[in-house]
Image (tube, rainbow, N blue to C red):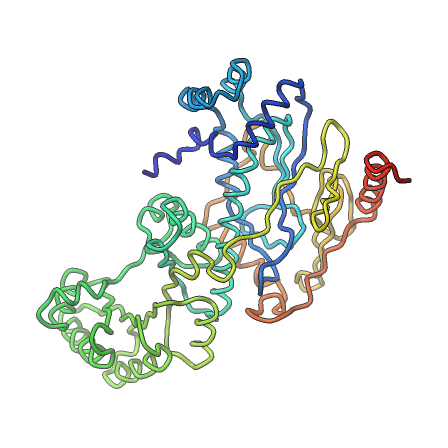
Length: 458
């Protein structure tokens, strides 16, 4: 099933109106270069920043963009498109340039995450895929980072596969949550594809297949003498903990070591402290306690505040679907066409004109201070540009960073973000983002020109 998502077979993964616009551009001989800007208009509830993710999939898609013979045959059956337009699509490849904020960087609302410059038909047709790829992974990486913040140094594992929204989402959630700081995933295919560490224990069904819970524990420890983590809450967590001590002692006698236990229900903060006490009393101070079951950043923070004795959390559904904020108000808008800056004036949806750059200013300690959105060729003293060229003439530029490098970069970025923007709930003064004088002047001038031309006002 995953083979259906091969990047060379995804040209039709677009909304129909992209194709109808492309056909009309073609008929009207409109092939001038266009620049589209991708950005998020506003923060979802309790969000104060975003984590960039999904760029690698976009670049792979663009580099492999083409319509297959099957695609063209399907479009022909719709009886909407001329043979000459379909012939044009057959030869069409993406030949544009892309500037983007690299994955693992923190960014803020209204800042361009990515800008595409290409002939208008090419730039238009790739819109839907770009939004889809960046939206999902940015949502998840941001959610994952909030869980990391709540865990206060404890490791986290993605347990979300079975309830994510489909096969592709399950794989991309594992990737994006790793970018956001998770230590691994239960998703074996994602581990294979991305080299993410894979973790797993056992299910309650495994325990129920044995005559006694202890029999199940001993059998599992025998099969996995170096990696046994026992699920101890199938019947009674405290009784399960005492049986885990029994198993650990038997393993010790053979020169082996019980790795840990998992709590999956009940008051895990309270239970973890009781279980830790049982292990300590037995002289088993290094057995890991792992917790799962309906976790997100809010529940993790609550459990941590109560002084839990949990070493690691398995975080599933609520992270994998970003339950409290499952989407972003993300838009891909035309900002320049045929050499001229353009903009929308729709109420609440005004766009920033022209090719842009995001400049970040840090304080003397390397902490985020403020950002400035400027024109691509602006120079702002003491500021670092965030958008970098990642594709030229349809080909990727440079080496693509490994996922471990992206995560390492994110964790460094996250340390430099002020604590006030990481809070999990409640209003926060927004991180300061302003426009450069040159961008503001151009913005005002283009708006005036549009009003004069379209509304007859001066």
